[in-house]
Image 1 (cartoon, rainbow, N blue to C red):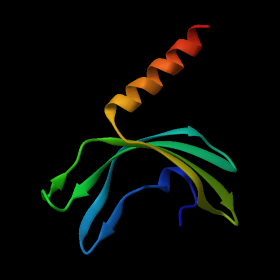
Image 2 (image 1 turned 120 degrees about the vertical axis):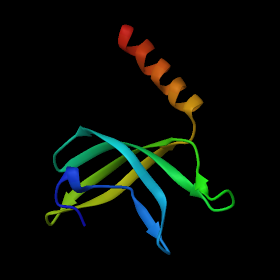
Image 3 (image 1 turned 45 degrees about the vertical axis):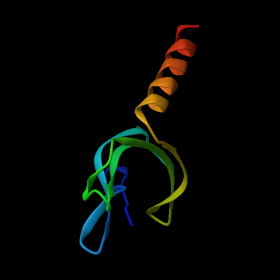
Length: 94
């Protein structure tokens, strides 16, 4: 387990293959509750290649010195990500 937000990752390896490959992350908040936005790709076994970029917002709680994931929201496509960005930008202009 991770003891700092910088150590948190969504990389996942199975049978020697990185089935979830983290490309980038932005730590949105730190503290007892930490929020991180990840950019990642899933391995497509059928095509033997990585799929399109995906995004995930994850919340972690620090207990006994270690971070534990408590919730997540996966943004499954570029179109969904753009819609979220547009909504947030619209609200920020108000």
